[in-house]
Image (cartoon, rainbow, N blue to C red):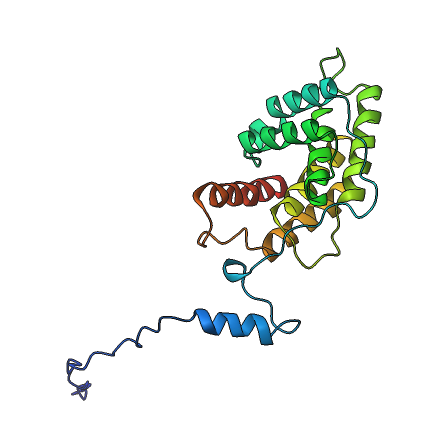
Length: 227
């Protein structure tokens, strides 16, 4: 019994190549118009977002801790938390701390930086020089710094920066380490959303080399802590 042969159409090579769309340059004026006429309606993507300067304290800023206490806690933070989560550019941070103590207060610093500073001090109390790893005195001291950091952190702003994500992560680390599990999860979720809002998960952007590396480290620190 003969079976009919299956006839397939001949393969004809497509000699016509699809042309790529033309390259369109000089779109700076378009981005400028979007920012002007789309204000309050459209939010530019993170690489093209122009952020305003962060505000300083509108009320009385918190008092400066004694310098020897700050040096001790920053050193303990560097030897513990920072080694696992290097999310701070250390030379810049040391320079800013020095400038704060030379000025005698936080008046010249952005409020979100003050929140980040006290979050660092809080995490620095987790690694004490006492015989007990988590002495009650260190936990009380850390909670006071944590409270100051949380009060200084303004999450109601629409101008989020990397310090918002960094501070939320450090608060989550401290809260989890002192067995405040639910609070740690809440602050971690806030850090994830802030990081996505400001585009920390984007590898490319018009950022300087150091800033781009810090953005990458903060994002992966949040990811690692979440996992």
